[in-house]
Each structure stands twice: as C-alpha cells, then as structure tokens.
Image 1 (cartoon, protein in one colour):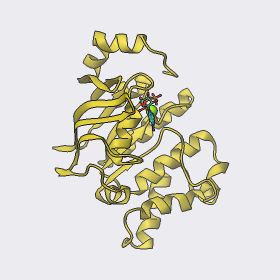
Image 2 (cartoon, protein in one colour):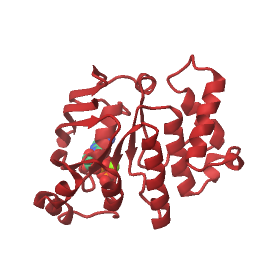
Image 3 (cartoon, rainbow, N blue to C red):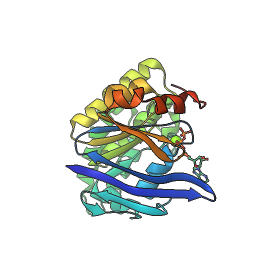
Length: 245
Ligand SMILES: Nc1ncnc2c1ncn2[C@@H]1O[C@H](COP(=O)(O)OP(=O)(O)OP(=O)(O)O)[C@@H](O)[C@H]1O
Ligand SMILES: [Mg+2]
C-alpha cells in the first residue's frame, strides 16, 4: 500500500527551481532513502511535504489516499506525519522530558496527559535518553544527544510516517552506527521512514528504495544498488562538492 505519494511537486525561489516536477511513492512499512548533492532540493522537499514553512507552488501531497497539500502542521501531526530537521531543534530552555511531552501533545489537544507522558517516556527510552537525563535542559546536551532528543520528539508524536533530514550529519562513526540501530528500531515499530542522508553507507544499509535528486529534479529512483551504480548519479556526485560522506 502507498502511504505517501508526492505528485508533480514544484517549488521555486525567484528564478531558482528548487523542486521541479518531483514525483514518487513510499510504501507503507518501508524505509525510503533520498540522496543528492548539496542544494539539490532535499530539505525543500520535506518543507513542501510538511508545509513547514511553505507549501509547494504546484503538485500534490497524498497521505493515506487523501490530499494533504498545504495542510497545517498540527493537522498533519494528528494524521500521523512527523519530521525532523537538518539542524538539531528543540526548546533549549525546556527539559528533555518537557520537550518530549510537548511533542506527544502536538496536534492532539484531547489526548490525556497520562498518554502524553507515557508516549514521551517510551520515545526517550527508545533513543537511549534514560531517566537520569529527563530533567536536563535541552541546551545542556551533547550534539549527539540533541539529535537523539529531536528523534525522540518525533517518535513521541506516534507518527505513521517519519521524515528524517540528515540524521547522521556531524556524527562520529560510532554515533552513526548507533543511529542506524535506532532507525531500524523505529522502523520495527511499524513507522514508515523517509530518510535524507549524505552518508551513503547509512542510506545503503537502511533503504529499500532510493531516490536521487539533482538540481530539483528526480535523477534516478528504485533499487538502491542500481541507483547508486547509475552513471548519471555517479556524475552528479563527483561533479559536486559534498559537505561530508
Ligand atoms: N527559503 C529559501 N529561500 C531561498 N532559497 C532557498 C530557500 N530554501 C532553499 N533554498 C535554495 O533552494 C535550493 C535547494 O535547497 P535545499 O536546502 O533544499 O537543498 P538540500 O538538498 O537540502 O542541500 P543540503 O544537502 O546542503 O542540505 C538551494 O539552492 C537553496 O539555496
Ligand atoms: Mg538539506
């Protein structure tokens, strides 16, 4: 079953076509990888899907068979769509636990505080932020723990689909290994994942499908091994500067 369908989505900034007629579908229960050189439109794609902070200029986003293009963020959260950001984002002056409870509550004003707290606790424990860290302020955490907190806030929303924007950027090799394990665990809970990443081992280990963007267009998509061997993909990567990998 298709959980998410992106149909002919375009987004321009002045004369720059950041997304140019992008289409793809994500199967329920899968991990769908997205790669592409810097500036190819990956984050813009997540922004346009989630309407944070803008909707596409053209095209449609279809979630569980319903058009959700331009829908407000709390409503998308209530329907089961969550995302993380390329830079660690949290409420710095709130505690770890408060950040997770706030996320669990987002878009669900009628959900009981007991359920919110339980969802927050489970999500924090899943990412390895144990009870001793619950009372710490978010801005006291290490970069890795801040990434884990952002992941936990997304999981606490109990999404059906989770869009992850470069979860491995800035991490050390062992931290990357830990993150791969965490994402596998999240997927095992039945959460469908769309994963933007530059670290190719990360994408190749996790993804069942891979899409490569270049200058706002879909360059290739399909089986990850075939896509990565596609000469056009090799050229797009070698012909561009990469910030890591
Ligand atoms: N809000 C904005 N206003 C103007 N231009 C923007 C805006 N957001 C993105 N762009 C431009 O759109 C293009 C695509 O940017 P985007 O951030 O989606 O790339 P990306 O593939 O996520 O790159 P990276 O790998 O560096 O994160 C870039 O040229 C970028 O400068
Ligand atoms: Mg980006």
